[in-house]
Image 1 (spheres, rainbow over the protein chains, first blue to last red):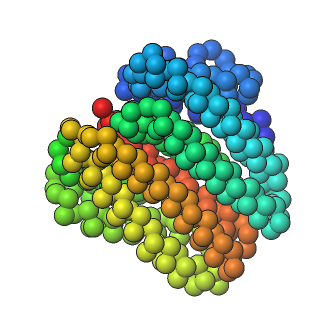
Image 2 (cartoon, rainbow over the protein chains, first blue to last red):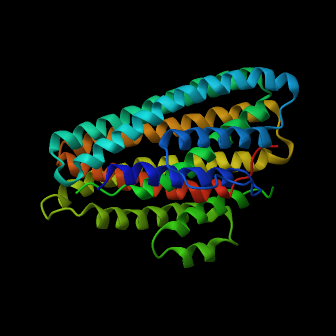
Length: 162
Length: 162
């Protein structure tokens, strides 16, 4: 299994699905995608535009929300980087996966998920402290919807351990 | 938003994802919330078959895996029921959502997600006592793929708070 193919496949799968989080068809990423960092950045940009479009924030809500959101995204990016590192390890070990490697991969996977959940809970609480309850709920729904869309695409690309 | 219609649609959409289940889902689209238990049962039966097929267990691994998996399914069923209850609560509050209802739904929503993750982690540890690490990793992968697909369909059936 080639490492590069996973990273590129991952990015190619992730970017177009963000437009599905909104009800209308906003244009996704166009052109040839060659660099993983550009792609991650594009995912974040598209995600931001979904929130802009769907949260309908007032000026004062925007001033409170976006700093929290940006802080959250910077922490999510670190978790995404860990996930990509883990995938690259999995790819390089796939054909000769040992018990120790499988156990380590599962441990790291669970650790990332746990950290991601804790982060999401912490920042949803922060958002809920500055937005009206219905908008906070809407934010949590969008965040979860985007997360699910990405997962449903990404997990399909990862071959099962054997 | 029609009471009970959305939760059933979400469950039926999830059910449709499972192999061979589309006709059953189509049949249930027009029925009532009383069928929720039947749907959950059908989802779990179909999911069990897919998991067993995907796990590629040896003859000696099967009797070790299935009792633990069935316990997992039992606990997972409680989470499906909580999800159905939550969707129902959301549906009944949707048209006139108060701040208190939005706060309560958000709290339950986040707790449910946390509990799903904890359950997967708990059973990965249990499988680890009876299966080789690569098979435990495989179980987590299969479970994640199926849950992501079902969540994806379920999320599409639920409108954002307004």
